[in-house]
Amino acid sequence: MEKRKELYQGKAKSVFTTDDPETLILFYRNDTSAFDGKKIEQLDRKGMVNNKFNAFIMEKLEAAGIATHFKSLLSDQESLVARLDMIPVECVVRNISAGSICRRLGVEEGLELNPPTFEFFLKNDDLGDPMINDYHISSFGWAEPEHVEKMKALTFAVNDVLKALFLDSNILLVDYKLEFGVATGGEVVLGDEFTPDGCRLWDVDTREKLDKDRFRQGLGDVVESYELVGRRLGLSFD
Ligand code: TMP
Ligand code: ASP
Image 1 (spheres, rainbow, N blue to C red):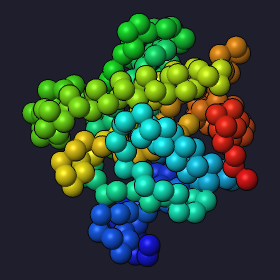
Image 2: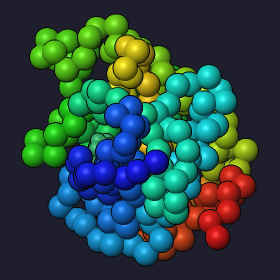
Image 3: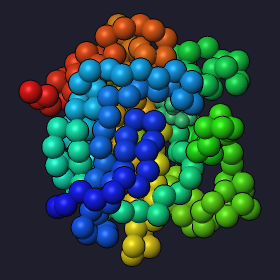
């Protein structure tokens, strides 16, 4: 597979075209950003750790019948993915209250949410990723109504698979964000990534934070915690 030109640079990954128009390369950089890009640092090994972590999770999701864009690992910091027409919406499921929902609704952190709750956010850093609803997505044409329903169903299907996977390693999947796109054949497919950058993971016994909240809150040991989670899942980063 030949790497051609850079299509797009996100906050933590860069996207490259290849000689196959249906295949892209995702390059996981060491850049770590939070607060809509207002805090950015380079963290050694993070690109490699997230690339391998994501590959492991995407393969688990594929095995459970959830279609993803992931094709294969290409190198320590690169993966091959299928080109999707991305939907500019972030899908969040929360099993336990944390982060923005605590600020917005004035609820304490750590409440078990039964049933888990779902939120859409518009992917727009300049606006601070505002929360939106199903009607906004349809009214402004960001996605077809049937694609909106499909994104919700897939995001909850991911919860069933990953909540159990993490719990087997004594880790709570507190919340996570997914992004979807439409594949060439018209199918809604999971895109972007699933790494500790885009979810919250707490140790079951100590409730220690093992995700990007360590970076947001200046707790230190950011990549070390991502690696710890990976190793508990059975991954090796050497
Ligand atoms: P929040 O508490 O900031 O709304 O985030 C909920 C979860 O979704 C958390 O695990 C972080 C993730 N997330 C992102 O990774 N990027 C985003 O732009 C948003 C809005 C959430
Ligand atoms: N809103 C997400 C976060 O705080 C992503 C970002 O802003 O970079 O982690």
